[in-house]
Structure formats: structure tokens, C-alpha cells
Image 1 (cartoon, helix red, strand yellow):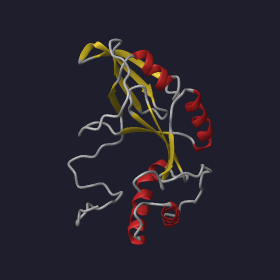
Image 2 (tube, rainbow, N blue to C red):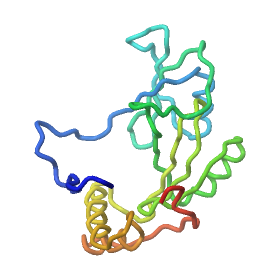
Image 3 (cartoon, rainbow, N blue to C red):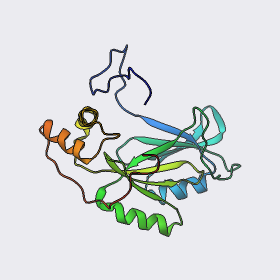
Image 4 (spheres, rainbow, N blue to C red):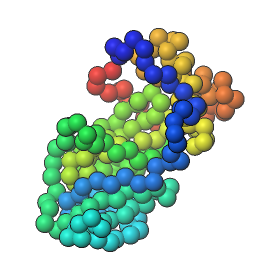
Length: 204
């Protein structure tokens, strides 16, 4: 990173006029309902919890999926749009969506993707473990499992501590030793999930 004065990394709330309280939903442009249901409901197992017209454009349908923790993914679909291939890379485009999965389901997930004819890659990202695939429109979908047991309300604190330890260590990215040290420093148990060995990925 070339920035000589990078913004501090911390779990403390910034001095801002207000603070968000979490992610409510994410909305993406989809193709048609059939292909969208086949991927998000039938393959990823997300319940379709609401269907209604797109209130800004009633010619389209607005599908609401529960991603597993009550947080919602919504998709605008139209029977006139075919599914597509290839990632969009322009400024402002979505790079990928990441959904949490249980570590003990990792092998089953890879088998299900293979059975569905979906290609995928598996990477050890240091702080978590990820399977990357694509949806019916070429949007990159990451299925991520935490490498360590971390309480949801402490995750930001653990990552910020691992960041400080990584910098002190002179490492390029946060690795197992930084995560384990962060958990210990914060008085949290170090329980590592059994996940397959994998490379960190291209470019690291």
C-alpha cells in the first residue's frame, strides 16, 4: 500500500454524525426468476420469503431471500432477461457477495457445487476460509467459513487486534498466528475449525 498515512484500523466507532446498526439488505440486478430461484433457493438453500413488484418499476419482480440469519438479499428479475456470464469490473460494480456457511458443511458444499455443474475455487484467506463460485449472471459468490470460533459481537474487535499484530509482525496479511494471538489477547478461547488445506490465492 502506497499511502504513507493510512487511516487507522480500529473497532471503535468513528466520529460521525450517525452510525449504521447493521446490514439490512443488498439488492442486485438479476436475470429471470427461474434461473435466480435455481441458484439462490435451490442450490444455496435461501428461502424465498417475499415476492412483489419492483415499486420503482412494476414491470419487474422483486424477490427477497433470507440469507440464513434474517438478513436479506433481494433481486430484481424479469422474464425478458436471460442469464449472463462474466464479471462486471467497472467502478461502482459489485465485486462479489459473501455468505456465511458452517465449517462442518464445507465438503458437502463443494460436492453440491460439483453436482450442479458449478466451478469453484477454495482459498485460505488467513482470517477465514472461502469457496468462490458464480451465480447465474456471472456475479462472483463467496461462501465463507470462519477458521476460528468468534462471537458475532466480538468479530470487529478480533479483526482489528489481528490487524495491529499483523503490522507489528511485518506480515503482508493476517494469518493464523495473528488470529490466535488476537483471540488470546482478548481473553477468548482459541478453537480452530477443521478446514481443508488451501492456497491463499493469486496475488498474495
